Length: 159
Image 1 (cartoon, rainbow, N blue to C red):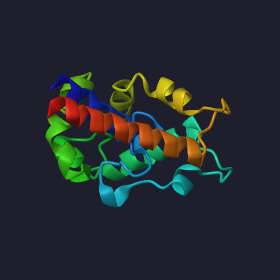
Image 2 (image 1 turned 30 degrees about the vertical axis):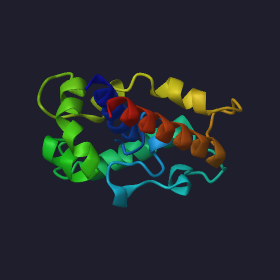
Image 3 (image 1 turned 90 degrees about the vertical axis):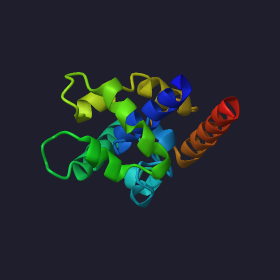
Image 4 (image 1 turned 135 degrees about the vertical axis):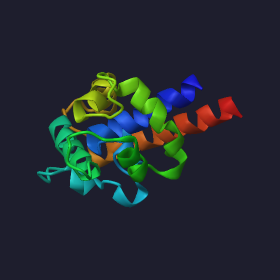
């Protein structure tokens, strides 16, 4: 169960860096909470320079958080999170809230979700193989491949 929880935290908390629901850039493209709401590389690369910076990811995450916050209260409730989640991640919403809800009000702010993914900066830096401070399409694709391999390995460990 711990491995599942860690995976859920990475998927939610970090695509929250971009969904705001990607513990780094790997989930930003193709692994967002709602399949119909995935973020393309071009959407993340707001200035069109061919690299996605942490600032661009934070801005995208804030916009996606705002979109998911359907009642505009600055927090995501269980129902708002569930409406965004892909079916295979819905079972982790309660765990995410339990982990990330610092003030224990049963809802998550953008800051709480970002705080729940303390490794997101390291994950970004690990993906930035050329040290440019931004992620190219190729670096993000390599990150997606690594993420998928990790998921496949976790499923094999559980099976």
